[in-house]
Structure formats: structure tokens, C-alpha cells
Amino acid sequence: MIRFLHSASLGFVILVLAACDAAPAPPASQSVSSIAPREQLLRLVEHYWDEYLLLNPQMLPESADRPYDGSRGYDISAQFLADPLALERRYLGAVLALPRLRLDADSRLTYDIFRQERELAVESFTYPAELLPVNPFNSMPLLFAQTGTGEGRYAILSAADYEHWRARTDDYAQWTRQAIANMRDGMRRGYALPRVLVEQMLPTLAALGADTPANVFYQPLRTIPATLADAERNRLSGAITAGVRDKILPSYRALHDFLRNEYLPRARSSVGLSALPLGDSWYAYLIKRETGSSLTPAEIHNLGVAEVERLRQRLQTALAETAFAGNARGFFEAMGRDPHVSFKTPDDLLSFYDELKNQVAPSLAALFSQTPQSDFTIRRVETFREPTAPALSYQRATPNGKIAAILYVNAAGISAQPITAAAAGFLREAVPGHHTQLAIQQERSDLPRFRRFGGDPAFVEGWGLYAASLGEELGLYRDPESRITALVGQLECAAGLVIDTGLHSQGWTRQQAIDYLHAELPGGEAAARDTVDRVLALPGEALACTLGERKMQSLRARALQTLGARFDIRAFHAELLKDGAMPLDILESKITRWLDDLH
Image (cartoon, rainbow, N blue to C red; front, side, top):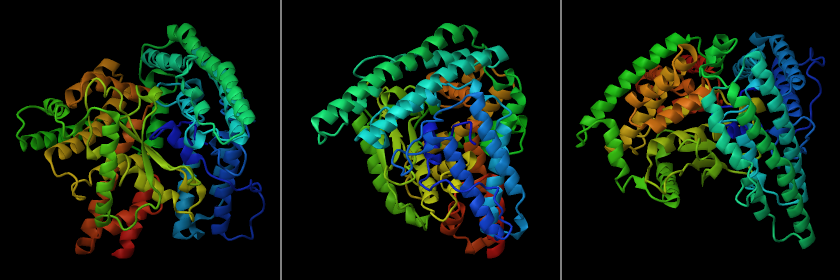
């Protein structure tokens, strides 16, 4: 059971988990003594996936053959949470009972990944995340608003689509009531959000609760097919309007009013996780979940400080190689005035990334023997997400492949000043970054579904940052601007180690973290505030990219040292990606076995 929804976005995790159309399997506890261990394991993990989806029907895509069952919905009540905890404990016990030493190498991978996931899932129930169910970056109100767009998999094109929409609407209204009850319970127990995060939620909730034609929840009215009979179109239009007016908008207004009138006065002035009951152990758990690392917060902090210093020196060297006489901040301000790398309209910005997509494709063969069969589209991020969405973000395709993956581009503020764009972000989020890795994984139809549609944070984010480092080898970083921007991306991730541990373990204030970023990174104070607030809302998330990338770079260095002239970068990347995302310790063991076989 995954209780913390994270990584590229909440929607990303929903898509990661939204497999699959098979009918529910028999209970995992049935007698299997006469079945080979490999088959026992495969049946076990497939049974788990089916039972997980039964507890979480909202994870099913609307286009799945199995209909959406709203009986459990978006449930975060204490009564509901007892069921997934029992599920995780039962399957952890079942996998531990299997004879691992009698499994083949591929099956041991599945065993190790499944066991570690179940152990982390069981541990997660120690910490009451359900008492902190909202934040302005990655929480259910934002996810549900994405389902209201009426686009792609959320389009209402038929009566059946409307029934799915109606069921989600009822579930969200129930979720809102439960979230408010949970937050009241949290305040009584000493679990409250930092005041700054509550203040940031209020404008978004107010906009989503406003009864205006521009509200995102009225968008499906514009997608009802003209080919439907007039009576059916009128019926759907009336039903959608009533559902929005009577259920959705009141839910957003109720959450807004609760947060403003009741919760905000009792929100905490402290910001770090360590200020909460069980905060230190909770943060240690999040480090383990996000990175798979046994490093302490202090060790990660020191590593981050050293990495920031190393990258800052590289950045200064790169700046010295240009004709620009100034610091990194001045360099990027000058870039913003350069028409070759800055854009004044959203269409121009999207066209840049579309052209870059075509430019990257022919270069991939030099480094990759396999690329995804599926494509992705490039789309502007929804207006309501612009204040908190990153410049670029990736959402994978639906499991059945009917809805393509999306690279979201944030064009907020482009009407006021030009937005700069660079290849490094595209390489990280799209190709050969997140799209390449996740699509290859999803296209492995022979993998168990929990591996096809899952994603270890440090592997996924580490691969994205590693992919951005391949720009020179791909022949894409031909100018100083591209190389410097790629270095700044690495520097931002390294700084994440410092401020994440500083805020959540070392008692840093919000302003202390903002000042640190403003001093170390070329972005302005507004960008520093946004980064710090995301770290406050999502403890541990910022640790994944640098620790994952460092592991992959070290594995590449080991492979080169071991194989010498026989080292093949295409073969190395294929081995790294072919089995999907996995915890870094398991990845290291896998690459070690691969090198031993080749050596």
C-alpha cells in the first residue's frame, strides 16, 4: 500500500499504479506446496496487485475493462486504513515464507523488490500521513482538479464516462469531509501543517471553488460530442452542471473555509518534520523510502554541502570559459534577454520543445540500443497548477496505452517577461530521461505488474538527472549556455540534500533555507521560496535525484574500470533500464552480477 503519493506528481503515481484489467485472483493463502517456487512468487505478486486495486478502485483508468467501483473511493478514514495495513502484512509474511535461494536470478529480483516494498509499506503505517492530507504542491485537491479537465482519459464522451465522473465526484465530496475530520484530529494530536503551506493552499482552493464559466470543472461541457443525440447531450450537460454546482464546488469551498477559519489559526509556526510527534523517526523512514539509503540526515547534509561546493566550482570554471564577465545570476539574467534562448509566448515555448524532441531522436542510437515504442505529447500545464508546477514535468501513459504520455510545460508569467528554456530539462523529463526509462519499463509485458507500473523514487529521479548529464555525449550541449544550465540542474539537486535535511532534521528556519538557496543558486528569491516550500510540503522528495544519479555514475565508472576496452555504453544503459526501476541497493547487486558474468 503506497500511502505517500509523490515523485514527478500525484497524477504520475496514480498512473503508475493504474494497471490493469485482469479479474480478481484467488486468495494468496491457498495451498501452493506443489507449485515451483518461481510460479508461487509470480502468483503471489499478481494476487497482491489485484487485491490492491480492489482496495483502491480510483487507481483504475476509466478505459479499463473492469468498471470503476466507487464503494471505497478516495478513502483516508482510520477504518479504511486498517484494511491495506492487513493486506501489506499478509503479503509480507507470504513472500518471506517463499524459498528465495531456490529462485532463478530474475525471480530473485522480483522477490527482493516486492519484499522491500512491502516492508516499507508496513512501516509507513507507523506515521499518520492521513492527518496531513493537503499541501499546495501534490495532494488530492490538485489531482481531482486534473480529472475535471475533460481531456484525455477524463473526457466525458458517453453515458458510461459520465457514470465514472459521477462516482469520482461523490468520492471526492466524501474525501473532503474525511480530510477535514482528519485535520481536526491532527490538531488535537499535535499534527498540523506549517502556516505558510496553508496560506498557499487558500488561493488555489478559492479559485477551484468559484462558480464561474472559467472553472476547470465546467470544461467537460465543451467536450460532449456533437454526434450524440440532442436529448442525450442535454441530459449529460445538465447532469454535469448539477454535479459541479451541488457537489464539487461546495466541497472546495468547505475545505477552503475550514482551512482559513479553523485550521490556519492553529497551523504551526515551525516548518520541519522534526517538530512533529515521531518527527525524527518519520524523517528517517522517508529517507529510506525515497533513497533506499542507510545514511543519516547529518551524513546526507554533509554530502550535499560537499557536492554543492564541487558543482559551484565547476560552474565558475564554465562561466570563466565564456565571454561573460559576471556571476551565474547575471549570466542567466542576460540569457533572459537573449532571443535565441528566451520565449515570449506559450506557443513559441512549446514549439521549442517540439523541435528539440525531433533533434534528440536521431542522436539516441549512439548511447541506447533500445528506445520506447510509445510516444509522448507536449502540453501546457493547466492554469490552476501554474503557481506550483515545475517548468517541465512528465506524466506517463495510461497502462493500456490508449492515452499517451505527456510532457507538461509551465508557461506561467510568460506574458510579463520571457521564459528561458534549455535542453537539460527536456533530457531529464522526457528523452532520454523519464519517458525513456518509464516507457521501456511499462512496455516490458513480461514483468509482474507491480514492477511494470511501479517506480522507485531514487531510481526514477536519479535516472532523470543522469540522463541530463548525457547532453554532451548526445551532441546537444554545443554552447556554453547549455552546459552551464545542465550544471545548474545538478547544483539544484545537490542543494536539495542540504535544505531538505536542514529543514527537517537540523532545525533550519524557512528563511535560513531561502537564504542558502539564494546564495548558492543563480535563481532569484522567488524561485528559492518556491523550492523551499516544496521541500516543506514533501519531506525527503528532494533527496532522490542526487543520490540516485551518484549511484548510477558510480556504477558506470565501475563498469568502465572492470571492462576496460570492452565497455559498451549502449549495453550498460540497456542493463540499467531493462528490468525497470528498483531500489538502489538491489540495482547495485544486479549490475555487480552482470559485470561478474561479463568479466
